Length: 50
Image 1: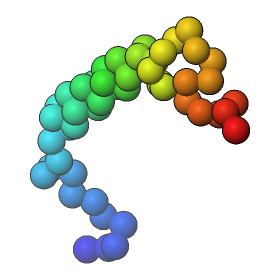
Image 2: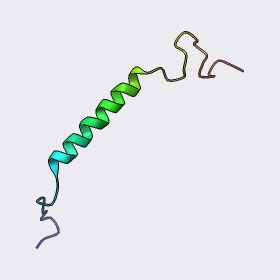
Image 3: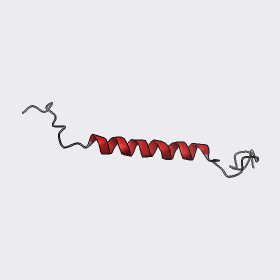
Image 4: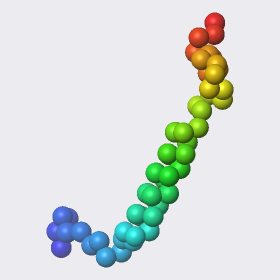
């Protein structure tokens, strides 16, 4: 057997697809939430405070 022969029979592609789908859903949910708390305060993340 060559080092380049791969056995893909042991991989569970449907579970991996479900996992990726749930990770993408979580990322979309996190992206829709405010990153630093208040949306109306431009400096809520502390970037413009000295």
